[in-house]
Length: 147
Image (cartoon, rainbow, N blue to C red; front, top):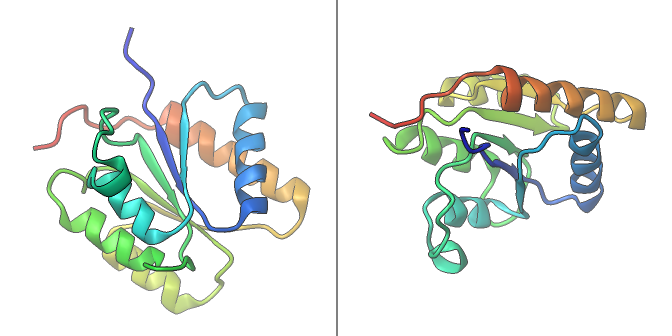
């Protein structure tokens, strides 16, 4: 049986982290979710450096990425993912509170696979995360090996 891919959640708001994890659990998603709290930590995770230098789990199945994070913002994380030959095929789903057209356009120009504005109401947030998790972790097919 193929090992389930991991999900990388890059989010600095603990409430959003808790809600996201609860929503994914509600749909019985068996994938492990690794959480990082800022862009620098996301890059360290993805490039297996600093505190993640001994990480042996391989690339995540999908990255759920907030844009407005401390240290390194989500746009820079997205750009580094899509510029790297070993990471560029990882789907990146932007999960943000930003409704700015500029953020939407820049995200897609940098290679984002989806741009989702986080709903402010609890029920809508949970429903959205369930749909995102089900699609990207269950339905979507990704290459096993990078070229």
